[in-house]
Image (cartoon, rainbow, N blue to C red; front, side, top):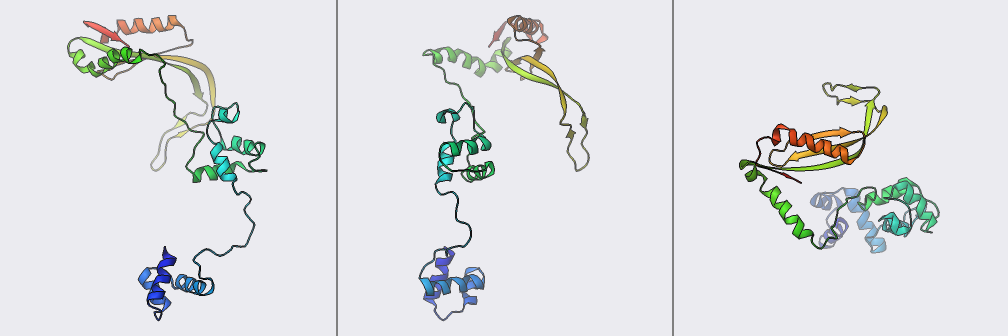
Length: 240
C-alpha cells in the first residue's frame, strides 16, 4: 500500500522532491527514493529477487500443518501430536526429507495451530437422554428455592488417579517483587481416589480421599454426607 501511495504521489506531482513526498506519507526519504528509482527501471512494485540459500520447504509447511489433526487419522498410536512427533512423521510420509521440531513448531505457531492442546466433550447415544436430563436440570435450576423449603440438592462425583506428591525441597514464601518458589523435586506417594459432594444452593464442598476405588468407599462417603450437619432437619435430600 505504501509503495503504491509513493508512486501515485510522484505521478501526480512529478516535480515534487523525495523529501516532500516522505513528509506527506510519513515515511523515510530513502524509501521514497528506492521505489521511485525501481519503478523507473522495472515498472514493478514487487520485491526484488533476494540472494541467499533457497527455500528448503515449498509445500512442506502446508502439508505438515494439514497433518496436524488427530494422530489416529494418520495411523499413529498417539492421543495428540507434539512438534517432535510431527517432525518424525513428516519424512515417513514423504512430506520432506528431514525437518527439525523447531521448524514444525514455527509453522504451527504461524497458523495458530496447537495440536498438543485439545478440548473434549461428551455426546449421549441414549435416545431418551433429554427425557432423563430435564428433571435433573430442573433440580439445578430450582436449587435455591428448594433450599428454602427444606430440600437440599447435592451432586456427588469422583476424581480418579490423583497423584499424591510430597515436595522434597519445600516451598519458599513470596518476597517483595518475587513470586513464591516451589521445589521441582518430589517423592511419589501413590495415587488417591477423591469423592466430592457439592450442595448446589450453598456452593460448599465436602470431599474425602481413599486409597482405592471401590463401591464400599463410595458408600462410606455417602454415609458421611447423610450424617453431616448439612443433611440434618431436611425434608428431602436430592442426590445427583
